[in-house]
Length: 214
Ligand code: SAH
Image (cartoon, rainbow, N blue to C red):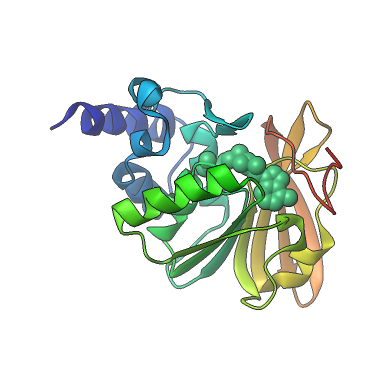
């Protein structure tokens, strides 16, 4: 087994299984996706560490445990259409793409989007579509989405995302101020929206029409 495969296996055991990650699909995807290919060469040796890492443009790839926690919270069964806001490195989208049918992901910084697209192509993850835009507006035209995941922290749940969420769907998003947020799980049933809080987290800013202005 190669160096990275060994590190990945250890990451899954120590950071996910030894904590509260129990969803088999999440564990399989985290075991499969080569996280080191989503960070710069100089940082590959730290790609499987228990922490976020810088990815350029002042942004970060989330800690593996957070990626797994958010993925697990979406309760995916395999046939879903999922929307992600905040492509960043593309790692979270890649994990989702191993579990569901189709991933749509939106990023507002062009350099990050371009790099993520290259990584998807290299890995032949062909069920991911990515675009440059303000993701707080969602991605109209492909919805409604069975699940939506926002990987940047905003002051509120953007209404366009709630509107584009399918009946029975789950939306996960960090909501709070620019220092600390809580992970909120929004569920839509019979047109009614129910919000539950999962844990405290720290994400980079969600910047846009329904996010922070800078
Ligand atoms: N899911 C990413 C995490 C990236 S950090 C990963 O796995 O690497 C959050 C990302 O959200 C940043 O790249 C940031 O530029 C992006 N972002 C912030 N506000 C956004 C918005 N309104 N629309 C789309 N992307 C946004």
